[in-house]
Length: 109
Image (cartoon, rainbow, N blue to C red; front, side, top):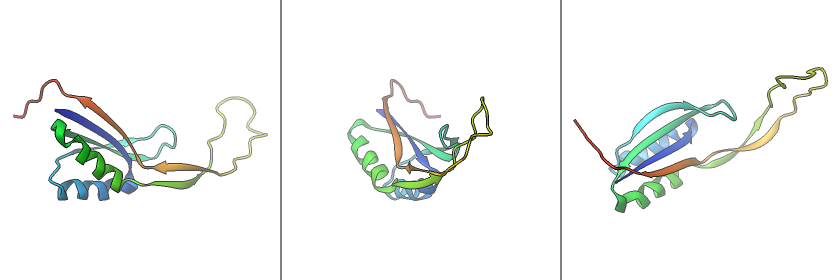
């Protein structure tokens, strides 16, 4: 058995959740916040048999898209802020960060 942990942007969360349900895959959703953009994310925890991991990864890949977003950098924490001019920067956001870890034991009560 494996535990798939997928961290996805909130914009993709509902689409992924619906797709997992359609495929008969159960998941636990947790609200989370990204450190880089300080934006809302959703973390999905999916317990799955080894032979179905590929299926879960395909559902995630199909429903979590990378997109470009303009972000205004935060002002510097130290130093002179007088010379700091916040120009928007285009960064890629979205997609999914996925971890697949072995599960030694699973209990359900």
